[in-house]
View 1 (tube, helix red, strand yellow):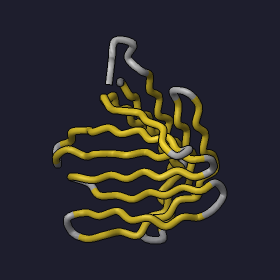
View 2 (cartoon, rainbow, N blue to C red):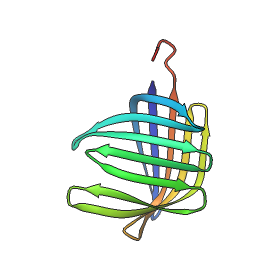
View 3 (spheres, helix red, strand yellow):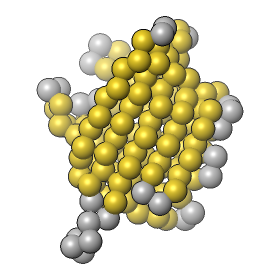
Length: 134
């Protein structure tokens, strides 16, 4: 299935938008929704899993980038971001976690090593390819 990932970052009055179109898979299991996709960057390929369940969400990235980004509505969550030269402590404060058919929408404040790193708005849209049989 085709997945479109749009990230809008607001940081100190500056707005940046990143868009990514990838192919991946969507599945539902034990009351949670999972979206899995892979992106290829200069550093190598990155596998991403997005899990959403009620007022909680989790983004796991593996491969060239290793990251664990947990979300819980209106609660601060601790995560980690692993890079070749070390692991960073990161935290999120989710202001919105919405999930409907074909859309995952997460709005959160992002902090890295205790420093505010902006407000991130993650909009992931996806749709089943009608000709696809998994």
